Image (cartoon, rainbow, N blue to C red; front, side, top):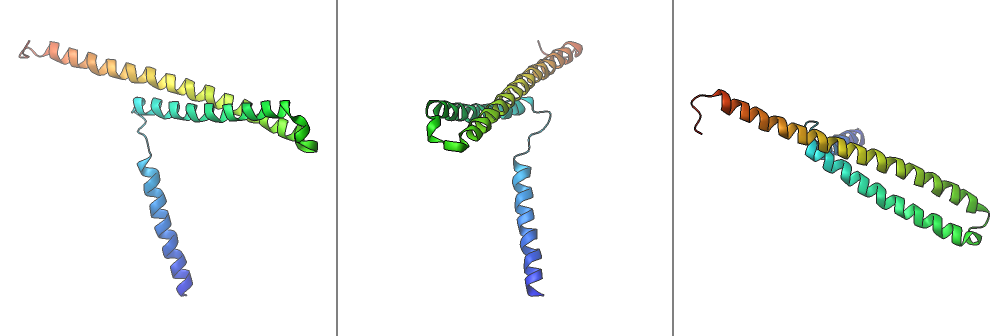
Length: 126
């Protein structure tokens, strides 16, 4: 009985910590500057992993005799990783560029609305 209540209590505590950690990392969908930055960081991570895998593939190609029978598996796996990281890099850069564009449009809309409001108000100080 005591172990089951301890287990339930520990699951509750763990669940509350993980949910609060995820809530702190959430980015508002309307904050395009933050989203662009997020995608740029993901692109940097993908670029680093891509370079690591390219270096590993180059090492394999220069010293394939070190790898024995599993060498072709290593080559195939590394080549697949390179394709995947190139795909991730491209997608993240496209998303970052999209959100930069949306952020600039959003910023221009705010400025234009401010100009319209100033122009409509006859009592505005000029």
